[in-house]
Length: 334
Ligand code: PBG
View (tube, helix red, strand yellow):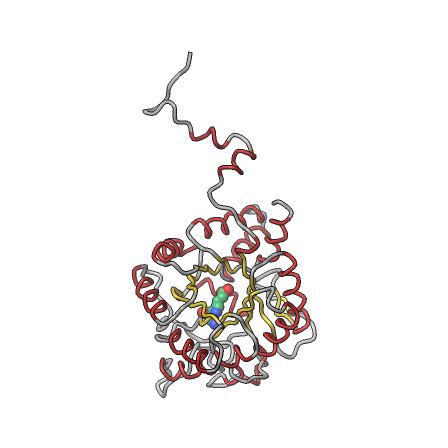
């Protein structure tokens, strides 16, 4: 005698959840080491890595430990590394000139990593002025202290050239200036860097979850970035940013942060035929680490669940500070 339940008696989705092997077989999405990109900080003038207190397990690297981290990421099967330079405080100025100095920390680090991993790992660089300006904004300021869009574009064009000269494969403009992708594409093409691609930070929101990153890059910012980064209340606006970035020649697009913006990520992924990245940012990292340290959540499961959710929403590539650890785990059949 069989009992029937509900309207469709034969339909029992739980049959597909009975064993780990069954669940594995029917999984719609799986993480792979090659989905992952490791963001890494390199700081000028230090002889030991400096821990970032709000990001337990993440450090500001020395040039030497950065090379090791890149080699380790490659060994684990990670796809790429996104480099952020942290100059000495004395080198910060209003125009962020350390960002366009061929011997500036980021350019030096790009050359170091290139010497270490060659073309085996995709080398990416943050193309933004905030790490180099004494006021901490992503662009240069006008007389009234506002971020001057077009004057900033000129600085970005120069940054693109010096980063490409140093050997980067991909530049990641993260400053949210209008027209940045087009200007950078032109600068690259005019300086013989047609093969360097642009990963556009297409939908980048003015987020409180960047908090720990400010410590990571020793940012001097007072105030916020709400006049250039997007308002968390807006989703449709991201499609407008997307249209512009693609028209200006973006090779890949990104949504950032990831977890609070999965709807935006899905809309963007549905709308394009270029690769889509999502950035699981510093605050997303800190939340899980902090809750896990308190014994409030299971760390490893939470990390995998967050990353799987980001992939399910449509990301082809995920920037995550856990990239190497997760890739190592995946290799061991996690
Ligand atoms: C700007 C930049 C930021 C991050 C990456 N690039 C900070 C910001 O926009 O305020 C944040 C990354 C993170 O929080 O992990 N150069």
